[in-house]
Amino acid sequence: MRRQLKIILDTLDSKHPVTRLYFRLTCNDIINGANDKEVNIGLHFFEELELYEECLGIYLAKEFTNFFIFNTLINNYYENIADTKIRRELY
Image (cartoon, rainbow, N blue to C red; front, side, top):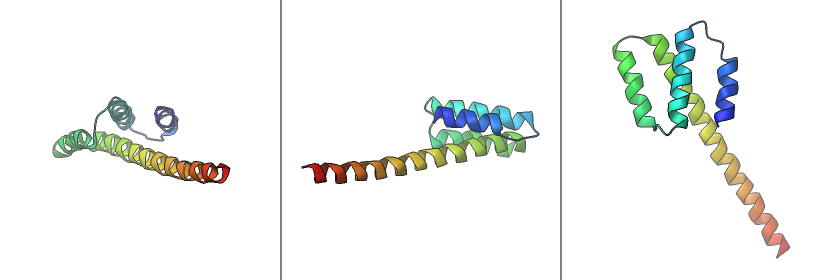
């Protein structure tokens, strides 16, 4: 997931350097183990301060990581099904 987030960060087209900064910071937090609740706390904090560029960076990082996690789970599930079918055919 780290490699995927780096690619997205490099191609993220944002006119606001603050958005890119908070995207990078949030991705690093998630990679280092921050859970969804902790990310939401930060997001709500910046919403209350009406700092919307920061919110956008946090929100994008959260959405991208949720997508990658969900996508990885689906891929692993289908790979395990294929492995199971192959093993059944061999034995």
